[in-house]
Amino acid sequence: MTTFEAYLDSHTGTLLTEELVVVLRNISEATRQISDKLRSSSLSGLTGTTDAINVQGETQKPLDLVSNEIMLEACRTSPSVSFAVSEELDVEVPIHADGKYAVIFDPLDGSSNLDVNVTVGTIFSIVEASAATHVLKCGRKQLVSGYAAYGPQTHLVLTIGKGVQIFTLSGQGDYLLTTADARIASETKEFAINAARRPSWDEVIVAYIDAATDTPGYNMRWVGSMVADTHRIFNRGGIFLYPADRNKPTSGRLRLLYEANPIGFLVEAAGGAAIAGNTPILDIEPTSLHQRVPVIFGSRNEVAKISEAYKVQSLEAV
Ligand code: AHM
Ligand code: MG
Image 1 (cartoon, rainbow, N blue to C red):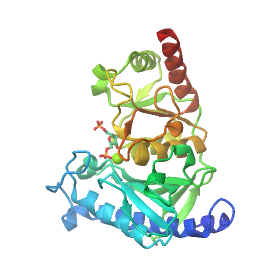
Image 2 (cartoon, rainbow, N blue to C red):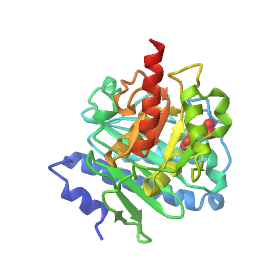
Image 3 (cartoon, protein in one colour):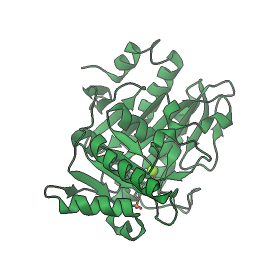
């Protein structure tokens, strides 16, 4: 079986620079360590919450902080990393003055689910950035993105700009390629949305969910941990929606730089689609590090239905 390292080596000099390969090796090592911490968290006391509040106003959990530190260390040990940006940190952290890549990450996505013992994940994105201002790039300029899904198995899902590969962590600590060139089915009959937010949905989302619910065969699935919901879509298709509040069309729950962009980059590389209402997620020009955006992604034909409905709505508005 192809190892993660062999996969990286086979693309060094073409899609990947030697420096990027070092960063990716260090990130993969970080996800191994986070996976280990998660497996024994109840035994090691890494449960519950801390007194700390992050820039989002959310209470941090011990594992949020530990995972953040492990990811930061992966950046420090990579000489080409210039900045680290994290969901858990207010501002970007300078790493190496002569570095050229920023690593942008959500160290532990879905951490509100930690004590429930369902799949959570680490999401990451790498962009070229020799100055702090370069971090605010539209998602299409990402060089690499990926996530680790910590479930019954630990999977590492990666795109280096072309194709999506899924690696599985072996008992010996090696990531082995178990799904080469993963593709997202273009059709689906599964949608993932937090239905409790229905009063805030706009008409397009209400109409789409009502039509799906009225069509025999459709099912709703919602883990409440975006990495887990994304991983299901990579396995059997589906659509994930965390739409805007209808009174604030540019609002959203998920963050552009370390959630929507890396997942959008993976989804498009696997033949799916990712939009934020009227715009593809990857075309949004970021204005701030922790900016939130509406997020709709997954099976291409289903996302197209929503995209068309938004186009019709904006034509009707003029
Ligand atoms: P987090 O990064 O603080 O864990 O928040 C992101 C999570 C996603 O994993 C999930 O899809 C969403 O927030 C759930 O939000 P809600 O609790 O509003 O349904
Ligand atoms: Mg998150």
